[in-house]
Length: 253
Image 1: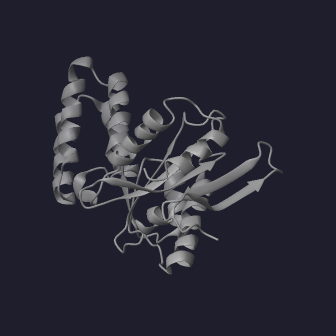
Image 2: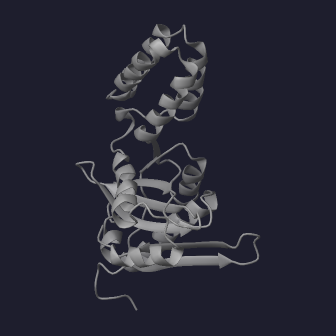
Image 3: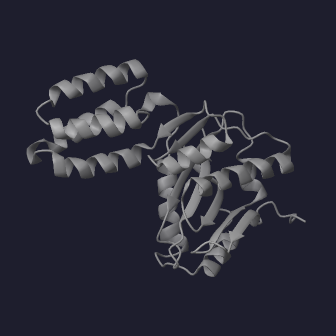
């Protein structure tokens, strides 16, 4: 029986498999009020995995949505022994089944915002409509490009190249993005190694990192991960049991 308190945190699904070498497990925690945030037809889903929260080293999977002001709101948190496709599929499917059971609502997001992880995208597409737009998280993309630029680009060009990529990111539509990207390639053709990396990773594989690709951003999800670490765990890696106690105590975040 569910609690009458809509803010009360509870487990909506779990699984264990002791026959695996490392002991496979997964569980998903949320509350009624958090689940209500997913009851919308044009739902934007944000998903990510974060570490350095649990002493045993297990990843914490965070899923949420953003409102029209691009403010991020948590829908559920999962703890799994891994962060593979099957783990994200378990999280997405658990939410879909439970929301249908509780609210008689068919959860079918039309946008996924995530990093370049194939596990998140594949898990999402195994559960939801494969026609949904997959939006690349700008924060993840920018950090990855910055690290590569430090290694692949002449030192005097690093800041100029990053400024150019920042300008491309604010493209309001695909046509503007394509033109800006083409001009960027011509301007920096003297940095062929970096351009090859950029084109392969952030054009051919993961292109939807510009504003006009689809609405929403998951910088808020990144901020939420920091808040959990700074304010709730105090940058201390907690044993799994204590982390679960915190989920109950701070279910209103």
